Length: 334
Image 1 (cartoon, one colour):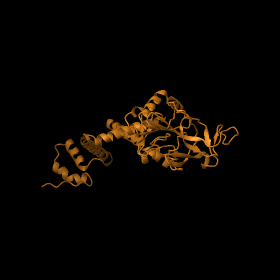
Image 2: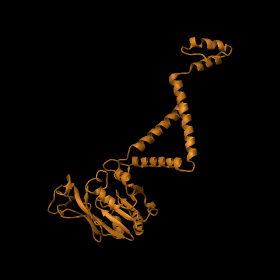
Image 3: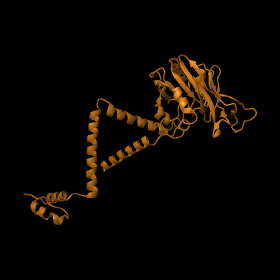
Image 4: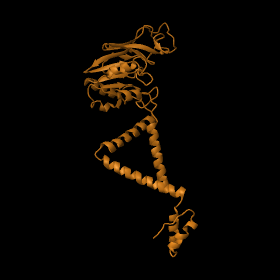
């Protein structure tokens, strides 16, 4: 009975682990979410990886880190990000809710996220909440599709992107341009220098999501930003659900086990031990299944009879076994 319980537990663990690995995350900006609100495309196409604040000092100074803040950036996080900029790092800050305003104030930047909804009734994709904007990087000007974006107050920053003359801020969210609501070309992308590094701010966090990457020239914008650099996404400012956190832990453990088995100095020993374990497990399962569903062989039955009656003649039993056990053919003996 204990063996069946142990086997059931192993099957449950294996099934649960397989389910966690195969069923993707559904959280916003997750690199493992293939749905419209995920970022799996930029991981698969451009090699994006997660990075933590504690690891920013370990990556090359010219690396580019994308930040999608799902919660306010606190003072301790701002210190680490400011140090990364001082060393020559590049940060792309994508925020339409103002979660990054504390960090922008901390580093002395006058750029500020307004968090009011930007609409454009003319230059848009399908609806006014998806307006077009024109962003200049180097000698290129790209037409970008935004998604529920806000605007920026630039101050001492450099303007990189503007909406059309027909755009306006829908401050009361009624979908209409009221007389007291600002209208005209508005900034949605800006940059500023801090130390040796560069900070680029977008007033929209959705430009590079799976559902937005192939709209307008969004993909070309991303390629211009990461040209010749290793791209990362800062994980500390994201907010993930319990399922995603558990899934990442299991996936990380499986990856570590895989690397240990195939890329470490003891890989051959582990592969050999695993093969032996699989062989004996499969053999044990086969014997149990055979015994349960097929039943004992005729030879086993014969030996059982002989153990119960050791005084009986073995040759006589062998000669009559075909009559006692239907279908049994006794071995021929010289």
